[in-house]
Length: 68
Image 1: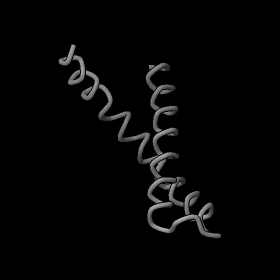
Image 2: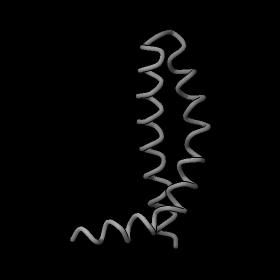
Image 3: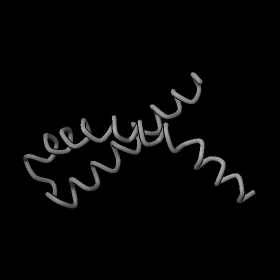
Image 4: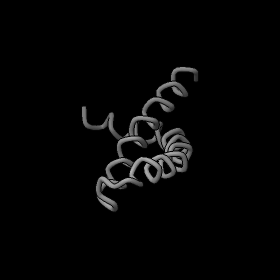
């Protein structure tokens, strides 16, 4: 369980940082408000990403094992 939580924390962190950065950039461009808006989006997105990854992770992993 520790490994699953650690993996989910790290994966959700990386994905939420990159996705919120990309979407904020697409919506605003690189403006003076970029970092503030990106940070606000990320603060909201990371907990959601963690819960979604933790809940759906085992199912997604089982589905992906079918591609062996």
